[in-house]
Image (cartoon, rainbow, N blue to C red; front, side, top):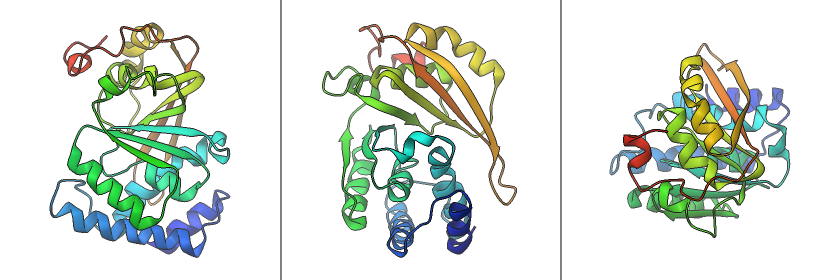
Length: 238
């Protein structure tokens, strides 16, 4: 997907990107490739692949969830190279973004990226999700908390749901859906105060594969003992 195809696909979804926004995506690509030579940010570096599998894939969250047209508060847990939060922020400039990542080098990249792109309303924190979720400043304070990660739903739920405000959403972006994985996570999701609302399935353009956006609504407060100590959710999933 070249930049023009990306712009057309966004327009078809009702998002008309300005010249400035297109420049921001292109600069993002250049900085991503430049920094990727120093630290491992992504295995995908081909220009058109980045536009499809990172930029477009990230913004599908805003294309399928109407709330992104409002000035929502989004937290991106384990953002890595900034996906999905930075492509979303470029497309929906009115949203407020908080990024947390456990690797300081990635945070340094993101801070330089945010400055270079001239983005406002984006904050980065070098922290473990488990510690961040216990911080009273951030706990239960976000409308949406997202993770575009390979961890299982039961693990992601413990890292993300404590940060979601009541009536807000934890959103897992998955390459493929697994009914078994969701069934396994049901107890964990309920324990943490969440309820599965929907699993949105769609195909990426150009036969790039199936994607799923799993929406978990926060219906009750998360018990204070969650998230547990760093490393525990991964080693001993709920």
